[in-house]
Length: 508
Image (tube, rainbow, N blue to C red):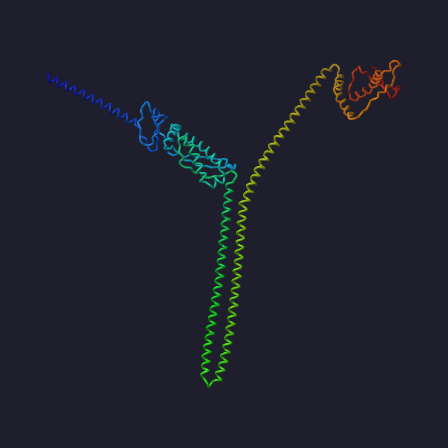
Protein backbone atom coordinates (compact mmCIF):
# COMPACT_ATOMS: atom_id res chain seq x y z
CA UNK A 1 0.00 0.00 0.00
CA UNK A 2 2.75 2.37 0.86
CA UNK A 3 4.40 1.69 -2.42
CA UNK A 4 1.19 2.34 -4.31
CA UNK A 5 0.65 5.61 -2.45
CA UNK A 6 4.16 6.68 -3.16
CA UNK A 7 3.79 5.81 -6.85
CA UNK A 8 0.49 7.70 -7.06
CA UNK A 9 2.03 10.71 -5.40
CA UNK A 10 4.96 10.67 -7.76
CA UNK A 11 2.60 10.34 -10.75
CA UNK A 12 0.53 13.33 -9.53
CA UNK A 13 3.66 15.45 -9.14
CA UNK A 14 4.78 14.53 -12.61
CA UNK A 15 1.40 15.46 -14.08
CA UNK A 16 1.48 18.79 -12.26
CA UNK A 17 4.89 19.60 -13.60
CA UNK A 18 3.77 18.59 -17.05
CA UNK A 19 0.81 20.95 -16.76
CA UNK A 20 3.00 23.77 -15.56
CA UNK A 21 5.50 23.27 -18.35
CA UNK A 22 2.67 23.08 -20.92
CA UNK A 23 1.16 26.28 -19.65
CA UNK A 24 4.51 28.02 -19.83
CA UNK A 25 4.99 26.74 -23.36
CA UNK A 26 1.55 27.99 -24.41
CA UNK A 27 2.23 31.37 -22.80
CA UNK A 28 5.59 31.57 -24.57
CA UNK A 29 3.99 30.69 -27.91
CA UNK A 30 1.28 33.30 -27.40
CA UNK A 31 3.86 35.95 -26.55
CA UNK A 32 5.97 34.92 -29.55
CA UNK A 33 3.02 35.08 -31.93
CA UNK A 34 1.97 38.46 -30.52
CA UNK A 35 5.48 39.87 -30.86
CA UNK A 36 5.75 38.54 -34.40
CA UNK A 37 2.43 40.08 -35.40
CA UNK A 38 3.25 43.45 -33.83
CA UNK A 39 6.67 43.64 -35.42
CA UNK A 40 6.15 45.46 -38.72
CA UNK A 41 8.64 45.26 -41.56
CA UNK A 42 8.93 48.06 -44.16
CA UNK A 43 9.23 47.12 -47.87
CA UNK A 44 11.68 49.02 -50.08
CA UNK A 45 8.91 50.76 -52.04
CA UNK A 46 7.07 52.05 -48.97
CA UNK A 47 7.52 54.21 -45.91
CA UNK A 48 6.36 52.81 -42.55
CA UNK A 49 4.66 55.50 -40.47
CA UNK A 50 4.20 54.69 -36.78
CA UNK A 51 1.99 57.21 -35.06
CA UNK A 52 0.58 57.64 -31.60
CA UNK A 53 2.96 57.75 -28.65
CA UNK A 54 6.42 57.89 -30.19
CA UNK A 55 9.75 59.01 -28.85
CA UNK A 56 10.46 62.72 -28.62
CA UNK A 57 8.10 65.48 -29.65
CA UNK A 58 7.40 64.08 -33.10
CA UNK A 59 3.88 63.29 -34.23
CA UNK A 60 5.01 60.19 -36.11
CA UNK A 61 8.01 58.01 -36.68
CA UNK A 62 8.93 57.21 -40.30
CA UNK A 63 11.03 54.26 -41.44
CA UNK A 64 12.24 53.35 -44.91
CA UNK A 65 13.49 49.78 -44.86
CA UNK A 66 14.02 47.63 -41.80
CA UNK A 67 11.27 47.16 -39.24
CA UNK A 68 9.97 48.25 -35.84
CA UNK A 69 7.78 46.95 -33.03
CA UNK A 70 4.36 48.61 -32.82
CA UNK A 71 3.16 48.80 -29.25
CA UNK A 72 -0.52 47.85 -29.15
CA UNK A 73 -3.09 50.33 -27.82
CA UNK A 74 -0.40 53.04 -27.70
CA UNK A 75 0.77 53.04 -31.30
CA UNK A 76 -0.58 52.26 -34.76
CA UNK A 77 0.91 52.24 -38.23
CA UNK A 78 0.25 52.93 -41.93
CA UNK A 79 2.25 52.80 -45.12
CA UNK A 80 3.05 55.58 -47.62
CA UNK A 81 3.78 54.42 -51.17
CA UNK A 82 7.01 55.59 -52.79
CA UNK A 83 5.82 54.83 -56.29
CA UNK A 84 6.22 57.79 -58.70
CA UNK A 85 3.08 59.65 -59.71
CA UNK A 86 2.75 61.35 -63.09
CA UNK A 87 0.90 64.68 -63.04
CA UNK A 88 -0.29 66.34 -66.26
CA UNK A 89 -0.13 70.15 -66.16
CA UNK A 90 -2.16 71.61 -69.09
CA UNK A 91 -1.03 75.18 -68.45
CA UNK A 92 -2.63 77.68 -70.86
CA UNK A 93 -2.66 81.46 -71.02
CA UNK A 94 0.23 82.06 -68.60
CA UNK A 95 1.38 85.69 -68.71
CA UNK A 96 5.08 86.14 -69.51
CA UNK A 97 7.37 89.03 -68.61
CA UNK A 98 6.62 90.90 -71.88
CA UNK A 99 2.83 90.48 -71.34
CA UNK A 100 2.37 87.71 -73.90
CA UNK A 101 0.27 84.74 -72.87
CA UNK A 102 1.89 81.36 -73.52
CA UNK A 103 0.77 77.74 -73.32
CA UNK A 104 3.21 75.43 -71.53
CA UNK A 105 1.83 71.88 -71.30
CA UNK A 106 4.14 69.77 -69.14
CA UNK A 107 4.36 66.48 -67.32
CA UNK A 108 5.73 66.36 -63.77
CA UNK A 109 6.79 63.13 -62.07
CA UNK A 110 6.76 63.33 -58.28
CA UNK A 111 6.99 60.92 -55.40
CA UNK A 112 7.25 60.82 -51.62
CA UNK A 113 10.81 61.55 -50.61
CA UNK A 114 12.94 59.24 -48.42
CA UNK A 115 14.62 62.19 -46.73
CA UNK A 116 13.94 62.12 -43.00
CA UNK A 117 12.52 65.65 -42.86
CA UNK A 118 10.45 65.22 -46.02
CA UNK A 119 9.13 61.84 -44.83
CA UNK A 120 7.86 63.53 -41.67
CA UNK A 121 6.22 66.23 -43.80
CA UNK A 122 4.53 63.56 -45.91
CA UNK A 123 3.39 61.74 -42.77
CA UNK A 124 1.88 64.94 -41.40
CA UNK A 125 0.13 66.08 -44.60
CA UNK A 126 -0.45 63.08 -46.86
CA UNK A 127 -1.03 60.13 -44.54
CA UNK A 128 -4.33 58.44 -45.30
CA UNK A 129 -4.99 60.41 -48.51
CA UNK A 130 -5.80 58.65 -51.76
CA UNK A 131 -3.42 58.95 -54.70
CA UNK A 132 -5.83 61.24 -56.57
CA UNK A 133 -5.99 63.66 -53.62
CA UNK A 134 -2.21 63.75 -53.48
CA UNK A 135 -2.01 64.44 -57.23
CA UNK A 136 -4.60 67.25 -56.94
CA UNK A 137 -2.61 68.97 -54.18
CA UNK A 138 0.64 68.65 -56.13
CA UNK A 139 -1.04 69.89 -59.32
CA UNK A 140 -2.32 73.06 -57.62
CA UNK A 141 1.13 73.82 -56.20
CA UNK A 142 2.91 73.14 -59.52
CA UNK A 143 0.46 75.29 -61.52
CA UNK A 144 1.00 78.27 -59.25
CA UNK A 145 4.79 78.00 -59.26
CA UNK A 146 4.92 77.41 -63.01
CA UNK A 147 2.91 80.58 -63.65
CA UNK A 148 5.25 82.44 -61.28
CA UNK A 149 8.34 81.22 -63.14
CA UNK A 150 6.87 82.17 -66.55
CA UNK A 151 6.01 85.66 -65.25
CA UNK A 152 9.72 86.28 -64.51
CA UNK A 153 10.94 85.32 -68.00
CA UNK A 154 10.46 86.81 -71.44
CA UNK A 155 9.38 84.80 -74.48
CA UNK A 156 12.95 84.78 -75.82
CA UNK A 157 14.35 83.40 -72.55
CA UNK A 158 11.69 80.70 -72.36
CA UNK A 159 12.20 79.69 -75.99
CA UNK A 160 16.00 79.86 -76.19
CA UNK A 161 17.42 79.38 -72.70
CA UNK A 162 15.62 76.14 -71.84
CA UNK A 163 18.30 75.26 -69.30
CA UNK A 164 17.56 78.40 -67.27
CA UNK A 165 13.82 77.82 -67.61
CA UNK A 166 14.09 74.22 -66.36
CA UNK A 167 16.43 75.26 -63.52
CA UNK A 168 13.90 77.84 -62.30
CA UNK A 169 11.09 75.29 -62.51
CA UNK A 170 13.08 72.72 -60.56
CA UNK A 171 14.07 75.27 -57.94
CA UNK A 172 10.65 76.82 -57.34
CA UNK A 173 8.48 73.73 -57.73
CA UNK A 174 10.79 71.48 -55.68
CA UNK A 175 10.83 73.92 -52.77
CA UNK A 176 7.04 74.10 -52.63
CA UNK A 177 6.21 70.42 -53.01
CA UNK A 178 8.88 69.54 -50.43
CA UNK A 179 6.67 71.25 -47.90
CA UNK A 180 4.12 68.45 -48.24
CA UNK A 181 6.76 65.71 -48.37
CA UNK A 182 6.99 65.22 -52.14
CA UNK A 183 10.15 65.13 -54.21
CA UNK A 184 10.37 66.30 -57.84
CA UNK A 185 11.72 63.41 -59.92
CA UNK A 186 11.38 64.65 -63.51
CA UNK A 187 9.98 67.52 -65.58
CA UNK A 188 9.07 67.20 -69.24
CA UNK A 189 7.92 70.36 -71.05
CA UNK A 190 6.34 69.11 -74.26
CA UNK A 191 5.90 72.26 -76.32
CA UNK A 192 5.68 76.01 -75.80
CA UNK A 193 3.19 77.98 -77.89
CA UNK A 194 1.48 81.35 -77.69
CA UNK A 195 -1.84 82.66 -78.97
CA UNK A 196 -0.35 85.61 -80.86
CA UNK A 197 2.15 83.53 -82.91
CA UNK A 198 5.17 85.38 -81.50
CA UNK A 199 7.23 82.21 -80.91
CA UNK A 200 6.55 81.04 -84.46
CA UNK A 201 7.67 84.44 -85.75
CA UNK A 202 10.88 84.13 -83.71
CA UNK A 203 11.51 80.71 -85.28
CA UNK A 204 10.92 82.06 -88.75
CA UNK A 205 13.28 84.95 -88.05
CA UNK A 206 15.97 82.57 -86.77
CA UNK A 207 15.51 80.35 -89.83
CA UNK A 208 15.82 83.39 -92.10
CA UNK A 209 18.98 84.48 -90.28
CA UNK A 210 20.48 81.00 -90.61
CA UNK A 211 19.62 80.88 -94.32
CA UNK A 212 21.12 84.33 -94.89
CA UNK A 213 24.26 83.37 -92.95
CA UNK A 214 24.58 80.17 -94.99
CA UNK A 215 24.16 82.14 -98.22
CA UNK A 216 26.87 84.59 -97.12
CA UNK A 217 29.22 81.73 -96.24
CA UNK A 218 28.53 80.03 -99.58
CA UNK A 219 29.21 83.31 -101.39
CA UNK A 220 32.46 83.72 -99.43
CA UNK A 221 33.52 80.18 -100.32
CA UNK A 222 32.61 80.73 -103.97
CA UNK A 223 34.59 83.96 -103.93
CA UNK A 224 37.64 82.29 -102.37
CA UNK A 225 37.34 79.41 -104.84
CA UNK A 226 37.11 81.77 -107.81
CA UNK A 227 40.04 83.81 -106.54
CA UNK A 228 42.11 80.68 -105.98
CA UNK A 229 41.20 79.30 -109.38
CA UNK A 230 42.06 82.60 -111.09
CA UNK A 231 45.35 82.76 -109.17
CA UNK A 232 46.22 79.19 -110.12
CA UNK A 233 45.37 79.81 -113.79
CA UNK A 234 47.43 82.99 -113.76
CA UNK A 235 50.43 81.29 -112.17
CA UNK A 236 50.08 78.38 -114.58
CA UNK A 237 49.99 80.71 -117.57
CA UNK A 238 52.99 82.70 -116.34
CA UNK A 239 55.00 79.59 -115.53
CA UNK A 240 54.17 77.99 -118.89
CA UNK A 241 55.12 81.20 -120.69
CA UNK A 242 58.37 81.43 -118.75
CA UNK A 243 59.23 77.79 -119.46
CA UNK A 244 58.36 78.18 -123.14
CA UNK A 245 60.50 81.33 -123.36
CA UNK A 246 63.38 79.54 -121.59
CA UNK A 247 63.08 76.58 -123.94
CA UNK A 248 63.09 78.80 -127.05
CA UNK A 249 66.05 80.77 -125.70
CA UNK A 250 68.04 77.55 -125.04
CA UNK A 251 67.18 76.23 -128.45
CA UNK A 252 68.35 79.45 -130.13
CA UNK A 253 71.58 79.47 -128.13
CA UNK A 254 72.31 75.88 -129.12
CA UNK A 255 71.65 76.65 -132.78
CA UNK A 256 73.89 79.70 -132.55
CA UNK A 257 76.69 77.71 -130.95
CA UNK A 258 76.25 75.01 -133.55
CA UNK A 259 76.47 77.53 -136.34
CA UNK A 260 79.48 79.16 -134.79
CA UNK A 261 81.22 75.79 -134.44
CA UNK A 262 80.40 74.86 -138.00
CA UNK A 263 81.63 78.24 -139.23
CA UNK A 264 84.84 77.85 -137.25
CA UNK A 265 85.46 74.40 -138.62
CA UNK A 266 84.81 75.62 -142.13
CA UNK A 267 87.01 78.61 -141.61
CA UNK A 268 89.83 76.38 -140.32
CA UNK A 269 89.36 74.07 -143.29
CA UNK A 270 89.46 76.98 -145.74
CA UNK A 271 92.49 78.46 -143.93
CA UNK A 272 94.26 75.11 -144.18
CA UNK A 273 93.64 74.92 -147.82
CA UNK A 274 96.07 77.33 -149.42
CA UNK A 275 95.10 76.31 -152.81
CA UNK A 276 91.53 77.10 -152.37
CA UNK A 277 91.97 80.56 -150.86
CA UNK A 278 89.39 82.06 -153.10
CA UNK A 279 86.99 79.24 -152.47
CA UNK A 280 87.59 79.61 -148.76
CA UNK A 281 86.84 83.31 -148.88
CA UNK A 282 83.72 82.61 -150.85
CA UNK A 283 82.76 79.93 -148.36
CA UNK A 284 83.55 82.24 -145.49
CA UNK A 285 81.43 84.97 -147.02
CA UNK A 286 78.72 82.44 -147.62
CA UNK A 287 79.06 81.16 -144.06
CA UNK A 288 78.91 84.67 -142.71
CA UNK A 289 75.87 85.39 -144.82
CA UNK A 290 74.29 82.18 -143.61
CA UNK A 291 75.18 83.07 -140.05
CA UNK A 292 73.68 86.53 -140.41
CA UNK A 293 70.62 85.04 -142.01
CA UNK A 294 70.39 82.50 -139.18
CA UNK A 295 70.84 85.19 -136.59
CA UNK A 296 68.18 87.29 -138.21
CA UNK A 297 65.87 84.28 -138.35
CA UNK A 298 66.65 83.52 -134.72
CA UNK A 299 65.94 87.11 -133.73
CA UNK A 300 62.66 86.99 -135.62
CA UNK A 301 61.71 83.78 -133.84
CA UNK A 302 62.70 85.29 -130.50
CA UNK A 303 60.57 88.38 -131.29
CA UNK A 304 57.66 86.10 -132.20
CA UNK A 305 58.11 84.19 -128.96
CA UNK A 306 58.26 87.46 -126.99
CA UNK A 307 55.09 88.67 -128.73
CA UNK A 308 53.30 85.41 -127.92
CA UNK A 309 54.52 85.63 -124.33
CA UNK A 310 53.29 89.21 -124.08
CA UNK A 311 49.91 88.19 -125.47
CA UNK A 312 49.67 85.28 -123.03
CA UNK A 313 50.71 87.53 -120.15
CA UNK A 314 48.16 90.17 -121.20
CA UNK A 315 45.42 87.53 -121.45
CA UNK A 316 46.45 86.17 -118.04
CA UNK A 317 46.38 89.68 -116.55
CA UNK A 318 42.99 90.28 -118.16
CA UNK A 319 41.55 87.02 -116.76
CA UNK A 320 43.09 87.82 -113.37
CA UNK A 321 41.58 91.29 -113.33
CA UNK A 322 38.19 89.91 -114.45
CA UNK A 323 38.32 87.25 -111.74
CA UNK A 324 39.33 89.87 -109.18
CA UNK A 325 36.49 92.17 -110.28
CA UNK A 326 34.01 89.29 -110.10
CA UNK A 327 35.34 88.38 -106.66
CA UNK A 328 34.97 91.99 -105.50
CA UNK A 329 31.44 92.02 -106.94
CA UNK A 330 30.62 88.78 -105.08
CA UNK A 331 32.03 90.31 -101.89
CA UNK A 332 29.91 93.43 -102.35
CA UNK A 333 26.79 91.31 -103.01
CA UNK A 334 27.51 89.23 -99.90
CA UNK A 335 28.08 92.37 -97.83
CA UNK A 336 24.82 93.79 -99.19
CA UNK A 337 22.94 90.61 -98.24
CA UNK A 338 24.55 90.68 -94.80
CA UNK A 339 23.62 94.34 -94.34
CA UNK A 340 20.03 93.61 -95.45
CA UNK A 341 19.88 90.72 -93.00
CA UNK A 342 21.20 92.94 -90.22
CA UNK A 343 18.68 95.66 -91.06
CA UNK A 344 15.92 93.04 -91.15
CA UNK A 345 17.01 91.78 -87.74
CA UNK A 346 17.52 95.15 -86.02
CA UNK A 347 14.99 97.43 -87.72
CA UNK A 348 12.31 95.35 -89.40
CA UNK A 349 11.84 93.16 -86.32
CA UNK A 350 11.41 96.26 -84.15
CA UNK A 351 9.04 97.72 -86.73
CA UNK A 352 7.01 94.50 -86.72
CA UNK A 353 6.83 94.58 -82.91
CA UNK A 354 5.91 98.28 -82.98
CA UNK A 355 3.32 97.59 -85.68
CA UNK A 356 1.78 94.81 -83.60
CA UNK A 357 1.80 97.07 -80.52
CA UNK A 358 0.15 99.90 -82.48
CA UNK A 359 -2.47 97.50 -83.86
CA UNK A 360 -3.23 96.19 -80.37
CA UNK A 361 -3.43 99.77 -79.01
CA UNK A 362 -5.65 100.79 -81.95
CA UNK A 363 -7.95 97.84 -81.37
CA UNK A 364 -8.11 98.67 -77.68
CA UNK A 365 -8.84 102.35 -78.48
CA UNK A 366 -11.50 101.34 -81.03
CA UNK A 367 -13.10 99.00 -78.52
CA UNK A 368 -13.02 101.79 -75.92
CA UNK A 369 -14.59 104.22 -78.42
CA UNK A 370 -17.25 101.68 -79.33
CA UNK A 371 -18.11 101.13 -75.69
CA UNK A 372 -18.14 104.87 -74.96
CA UNK A 373 -20.34 105.50 -78.02
CA UNK A 374 -22.62 102.64 -77.00
CA UNK A 375 -22.85 104.08 -73.48
CA UNK A 376 -23.56 107.58 -74.80
CA UNK A 377 -26.19 106.20 -77.18
CA UNK A 378 -27.83 104.29 -74.34
CA UNK A 379 -27.73 107.45 -72.18
CA UNK A 380 -29.24 109.53 -75.02
CA UNK A 381 -31.99 106.98 -75.59
CA UNK A 382 -32.67 106.85 -71.87
CA UNK A 383 -32.79 110.68 -71.69
CA UNK A 384 -35.16 110.90 -74.66
CA UNK A 385 -37.30 108.15 -73.21
CA UNK A 386 -37.40 110.00 -69.89
CA UNK A 387 -38.29 113.30 -71.63
CA UNK A 388 -40.97 111.59 -73.70
CA UNK A 389 -42.35 109.96 -70.58
CA UNK A 390 -42.36 113.36 -68.83
CA UNK A 391 -44.16 115.02 -71.74
CA UNK A 392 -46.64 112.15 -71.88
CA UNK A 393 -47.35 112.42 -68.17
CA UNK A 394 -47.63 116.25 -68.46
CA UNK A 395 -50.11 115.93 -71.34
CA UNK A 396 -52.03 113.27 -69.43
CA UNK A 397 -52.14 115.59 -66.40
CA UNK A 398 -53.33 118.51 -68.56
CA UNK A 399 -55.94 116.33 -70.22
CA UNK A 400 -57.12 115.17 -66.82
CA UNK A 401 -57.25 118.80 -65.66
CA UNK A 402 -59.20 119.80 -68.75
CA UNK A 403 -61.63 116.93 -68.16
CA UNK A 404 -62.12 118.02 -64.55
CA UNK A 405 -62.55 121.65 -65.72
CA UNK A 406 -65.20 120.63 -68.25
CA UNK A 407 -66.91 118.50 -65.60
CA UNK A 408 -66.86 121.40 -63.12
CA UNK A 409 -68.35 123.75 -65.75
CA UNK A 410 -71.06 121.35 -66.86
CA UNK A 411 -73.81 123.77 -65.81
CA UNK A 412 -72.13 126.80 -67.39
CA UNK A 413 -70.02 125.51 -70.31
CA UNK A 414 -69.26 129.02 -71.52
CA UNK A 415 -67.07 129.61 -68.43
CA UNK A 416 -64.49 126.89 -69.41
CA UNK A 417 -63.10 128.74 -72.49
CA UNK A 418 -62.92 131.95 -70.46
CA UNK A 419 -60.89 130.22 -67.75
CA UNK A 420 -58.58 128.69 -70.35
CA UNK A 421 -58.11 132.10 -71.93
CA UNK A 422 -57.32 133.58 -68.51
CA UNK A 423 -54.78 130.78 -68.02
CA UNK A 424 -53.14 131.69 -71.34
CA UNK A 425 -53.06 135.46 -70.60
CA UNK A 426 -49.70 135.36 -68.69
CA UNK A 427 -48.04 133.74 -71.69
CA UNK A 428 -49.58 136.28 -74.06
CA UNK A 429 -48.52 139.15 -71.83
CA UNK A 430 -45.00 137.61 -71.59
CA UNK A 431 -44.73 137.48 -75.38
CA UNK A 432 -45.93 141.10 -75.63
CA UNK A 433 -43.36 142.15 -73.04
CA UNK A 434 -40.64 140.37 -75.04
CA UNK A 435 -41.64 142.41 -78.07
CA UNK A 436 -40.86 145.72 -76.34
CA UNK A 437 -38.31 144.66 -73.75
CA UNK A 438 -35.36 145.95 -75.78
CA UNK A 439 -36.95 149.37 -76.50
CA UNK A 440 -35.42 152.31 -74.63
CA UNK A 441 -38.18 154.59 -73.31
CA UNK A 442 -36.99 157.76 -71.61
CA UNK A 443 -40.42 158.88 -70.43
CA UNK A 444 -44.16 158.26 -70.87
CA UNK A 445 -46.63 161.11 -71.34
CA UNK A 446 -50.33 160.43 -70.66
CA UNK A 447 -52.78 162.71 -72.46
CA UNK A 448 -56.16 163.02 -70.75
CA UNK A 449 -58.96 163.91 -73.10
CA UNK A 450 -60.81 165.71 -70.32
CA UNK A 451 -64.06 164.37 -71.59
CA UNK A 452 -65.51 164.33 -68.05
CA UNK A 453 -67.59 166.96 -66.39
CA UNK A 454 -66.10 170.15 -65.18
CA UNK A 455 -65.94 168.94 -61.64
CA UNK A 456 -64.67 165.35 -62.31
CA UNK A 457 -62.14 165.62 -65.10
CA UNK A 458 -59.89 162.88 -63.58
CA UNK A 459 -57.90 160.20 -65.34
CA UNK A 460 -59.96 157.45 -63.70
CA UNK A 461 -62.99 158.57 -65.64
CA UNK A 462 -60.93 158.47 -68.81
CA UNK A 463 -59.70 154.97 -67.95
CA UNK A 464 -63.22 153.66 -67.47
CA UNK A 465 -64.28 155.38 -70.65
CA UNK A 466 -61.40 153.73 -72.49
CA UNK A 467 -62.20 150.34 -70.92
CA UNK A 468 -65.83 150.58 -72.04
CA UNK A 469 -64.61 151.59 -75.46
CA UNK A 470 -62.32 148.56 -75.73
CA UNK A 471 -65.08 146.04 -74.89
CA UNK A 472 -66.28 145.76 -78.52
CA UNK A 473 -62.77 144.78 -79.59
CA UNK A 474 -62.63 142.17 -76.83
CA UNK A 475 -65.99 140.75 -77.95
CA UNK A 476 -64.74 140.61 -81.54
CA UNK A 477 -61.59 138.72 -80.43
CA UNK A 478 -63.69 136.28 -78.38
CA UNK A 479 -66.05 135.74 -81.30
CA UNK A 480 -63.17 135.02 -83.67
CA UNK A 481 -61.70 132.57 -81.14
CA UNK A 482 -65.08 130.93 -80.62
CA UNK A 483 -65.20 131.90 -76.96
CA UNK A 484 -68.29 133.12 -75.20
CA UNK A 485 -67.56 135.89 -72.64
CA UNK A 486 -69.39 136.01 -69.31
CA UNK A 487 -72.56 138.10 -68.96
CA UNK A 488 -70.83 140.68 -66.74
CA UNK A 489 -68.92 141.96 -69.78
CA UNK A 490 -72.17 142.73 -71.60
CA UNK A 491 -73.39 141.86 -75.09
CA UNK A 492 -72.59 143.44 -78.45
CA UNK A 493 -75.72 144.92 -80.02
CA UNK A 494 -76.12 144.01 -83.66
CA UNK A 495 -75.48 146.93 -86.03
CA UNK A 496 -78.47 148.39 -87.92
CA UNK A 497 -78.71 150.60 -90.97
CA UNK A 498 -79.17 153.69 -88.85
CA UNK A 499 -76.05 153.03 -86.83
CA UNK A 500 -72.75 154.54 -87.76
CA UNK A 501 -70.39 152.09 -89.42
CA UNK A 502 -67.44 153.05 -87.21
CA UNK A 503 -68.77 152.08 -83.80
CA UNK A 504 -70.57 149.27 -81.92
CA UNK A 505 -72.75 149.42 -78.85
CA UNK A 506 -72.33 147.18 -75.86
CA UNK A 507 -75.33 146.72 -73.60
CA UNK A 508 -74.82 145.60 -70.07
